[in-house]
Length: 275
Image (cartoon, helix red, strand yellow):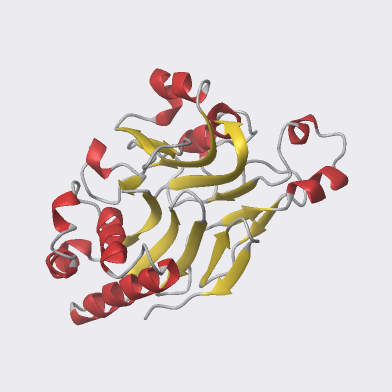
């Protein structure tokens, strides 16, 4: 499995997200506490948005994040209001750049932790369901990228919740047709650069861990002496596979079978089910 984080808020230096927290994503690449594997060293990726650009920048590589000098260099110089970051532990597909997250299409980014159980059995049927004009953009061999392009096929750009629900429903039906009992295991983050959606769902209803941060103004009132919080804007929102530290009250578990939206008009949380 994998670990990931998504940030939305006032522009922030990537270094402050990846390296500064006590249990940062870089620390999790070696010492994950809640993942299936302790070590997530099968590649990494970061993506971010910049003003006046039509699509996000994405940097991915196959080495472990904890020792990558280029990632450290980038993190100390890139500022953005929206970041995706992902560290990979392969569930069986090749360790190659095209299999590293986040995945990008136009203005959209997608990253995933989990797996399609029995993916080699289901892969052909799922690939046939991808819209023909989208199919040439499939570069890698992961179930995660397949899920992204199925969601795009089912209308992600117009209806993110519905598209992800229809994608999950197709995977479940296809899996059951092939005798797979619990086909879907997913925590997913997807964004268009303005809004950020996150999903936590599994067929078995035992989904991988996912947390969202408490409002920063609330944390500042609870912990006025914590220096790190003084550098974080009140509008900052983080969604993470596991907490970046042990500060009391900082992290809230995303409920099972639910999805959330971080957006300018106010955050939302709703139940989620495949269609």
